Length: 345
Image (cartoon, rainbow, N blue to C red):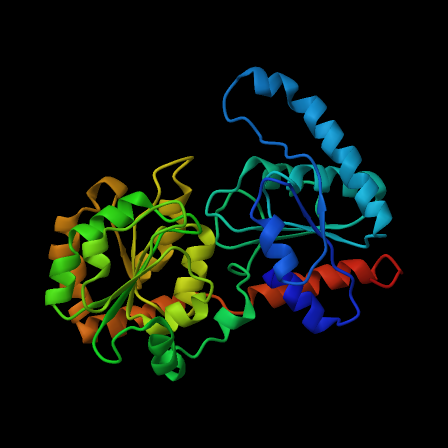
């Protein structure tokens, strides 16, 4: 959606259609952003031999047919893909219709869809070097409300918005759209210590989870199921405690927010790889999922949140490792590819 916004900014008359599945968050997020959404059957790519692997060719073929029909219906000039369930059918459908493809790989280790798609693409971009595909490194496209965020200027407004203390350090805790039980347990278990140290907490615990009532009743502790204004959440905070999905790392580093990254231990370890460049630059620290405990919060997060000079240095390092113009770079490439077809996008 950040790229779609950038396309619209560069070419206000561009027609943009998002491709998704009925199971993803796009069913809510895309219409909310004002873009039409076309649905195709999801095609999960099995990581191991299984019955699903045997059914994969038929599923891919069905999804390609559905995608081809959509591309014809909207008279698509270019397909921009980011990997995932809908990407491979989209790449194959576009190739069969002679439509150029632009790919962006957000993760530190490319997935199957983008590894295949990169061989078919006109332009390939990557968030970081050595992702497994050969592309131009531009960082991760970040929405304009984040890439242009003035954290200092919005600080007072942001804290008032959430009911946080106007002064003193604030730690932002979030585990993605669904929250993270490990992060919840670690922070709630040290909630008293955080309050005693005068540290405010903005804790997004996830709509499917709950948070201890005693913790949320502590002064300066604000617990919410979901954050709809991440820009204000970033502006209110001095330190983040979060997972290290590609988009999370991109946004947090883009706004220059120091972070404690707790990679989700799954897949091929891409979350740890996502955070590594920022951590290596000094913009954050990383802790294994199993080691993020109330004791870690007391011994490490509390003193870090109270160390203003160190947070300043970390914030500068984080901002230096981030990218603010990736969305525009990918959008411009897409528009250039569309122009080569001789038709108006």
